[in-house]
Image 1: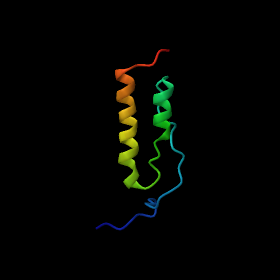
Image 2: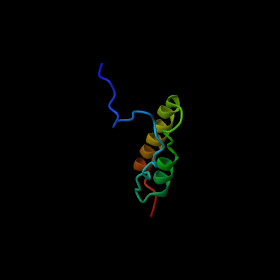
Image 3: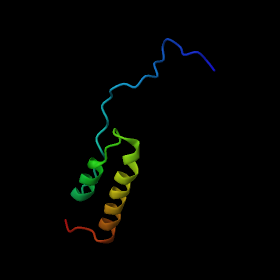
Image 4: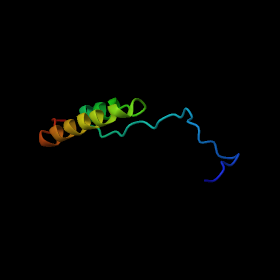
Length: 65
């Protein structure tokens, strides 16, 4: 195992997350914005599954724009 170098700090830092992707379809954009991967990892699969389900619904039945 290598010793850590003084230039590298592996401790977590507070960083600003990039904005979620924008598709131009409000229902999809809202679903993507609702995904919060900063919380408990056990919650991530349910959040991602909900977003994928919504995406599939919109692709099957596109909203009129």
